[in-house]
Amino acid sequence: MNATIPITGCLDISQPQRISSRHSHATARGLALFLGCLFLVAFIAQFVNPAVDLTIWWLDLRALPPASVRVLDVVAGISFLAWGSLRKPTVTLSWLVAAVATLSTMVALVNGVVVVGLFLTGKVEGGFPFPLSFLIALAFGAIARVACLPRLQCGGRPAEIFATAIACLGLFPVFQAYCLGWTNYQRPADVAVVFGARAYADGKPSEALADRVRRACDLYRDGTVKTLYFSGGPGDGAVHETESMRRMAIGLGVPATAIVADLSGLNTEATVRHSLDYAQSIHASRLLAVSEFYHLPRIKLCYQFHGAEILTVPAIPQNSQRAWPFFSVGREIPAF
Image 1 (cartoon, helix red, strand yellow):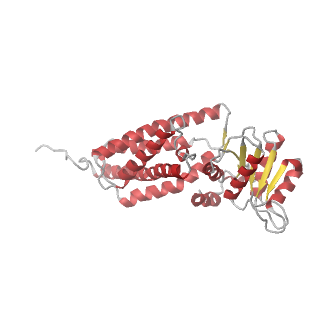
Image 2: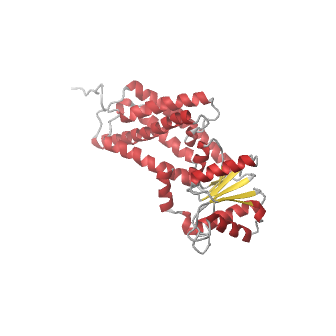
């Protein structure tokens, strides 16, 4: 009796192969759920603020007309979510997802090559050796691989699918922190915006605050910026965070006339709003943001929601143990 291949369902393969296929399918569908949500969030954000392009956080499509990017957002968002959540995706849906994922893979690879080119030419300095775009390309590639072979799709338990999506939700800000946050986009600018951190009761800056101020002072001394904009809130004692920053900067050779203090920078959002108001008042054309690497992606995102682009410069920790602050990075996940 001749063996036959079933018309629907999985191919008749061995149990280990079936388990492997099931896991790869669950992973691909979980990635699709996560990326589908990102695409739809980017599409919805356009209605909140037309100047906001969230798609750039995973695919740089600035060479395309904005309308084309919005079409991709909605098509990719709906198809990825449907393919990731339906128990038995149709062949047509699978082919659509495969096409979009393949196109996105190619775009992400091009983005990664561009980033590598920027590193090699010295236009940006990176502390993390692997562009995030290559990781994004791997994710889209995994989706395309499974989606383009619908007859090999062996389902995947819903728990595995959603666990993958939740894991991606947590890992995405972490990869943003280490890949984007450690990248130095230093350029000549009018103002360096330095975000506050803890100042002790005796007025001394914490290690995090001292690292930020020290980095900003380097930018001033080498002529990169003309003004240091210190923003923060109350310290542990009578000395305000910005006063602690000002004292340290003057001690490092920055004249008081080059320092502007924002005493109401109680959080990232407030500092962003106040610094943009100040930049507008002096007709500044470019700002640099200085903070810890893990903080910089959220800072950039906040400026983006206010319709402004900012270049980020990571503070260099004097204490080598602070180069991998797992607690602070973990705290940035819900904040981002």
